[in-house]
Image (cartoon, rainbow, N blue to C red):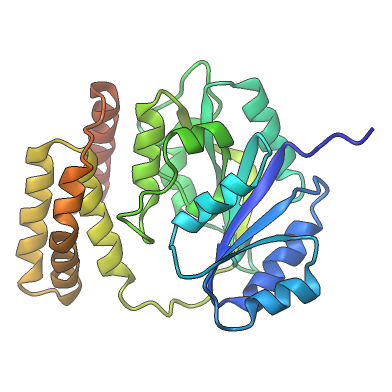
Length: 295
């Protein structure tokens, strides 16, 4: 009897039919033969016709509008595998990576999410984030593999499905752009381990950025994450610094404006981190500040 796959793949896409086809060619050739669910965020470029014609074995969730990162949660709910690997429409997994991830999750029942080592582009250059995660000051735990982290790249993680859904998945207030930290906080707040495991490998082939406002969106979401989970003096201080930058930086001005529009909702949904997770977040803040300080 063939054993059912333990890892499924959740993929969100919007108007990226060409790169999506490349990603699916790689994903469907994996030796693990994972089931794939594609949540289509209201594409208008023929994505759904392409999926029906070339990839009939893929389950498609035809969302009526762009739900941003929430589409990933729609895909997770549609899967019934115990573990879920996330891909974007420009990323895929190294052959054997999902089997390695499943083994780590099987062996470590507190592990909620593991972050892979990411190789970028045809040259397979290591993503700089690999080094940041591997050098995390949070160190290791005896009941977890890899290095403890509170951040990751969304298209290069494998999660325990129950942990992801218990944490609520990606937060609706953030949409897209730097949304990973809040999910890491929420997993850790529930007691789940979040670690970087470089023996699991993902490939990422991003196109040259066509999103000129991404910097503003990421800064907005970093500040909203602070208001949602961090101490109020910390969030207020981050807001003052962004306001100061907004005097001369258009991206900061946009980030501040969009944050203020969403701030009432963030305050209604505010849920401060448990003390042990807040201490870990502060340690990471201090480490990042030290790394960014002028020599």
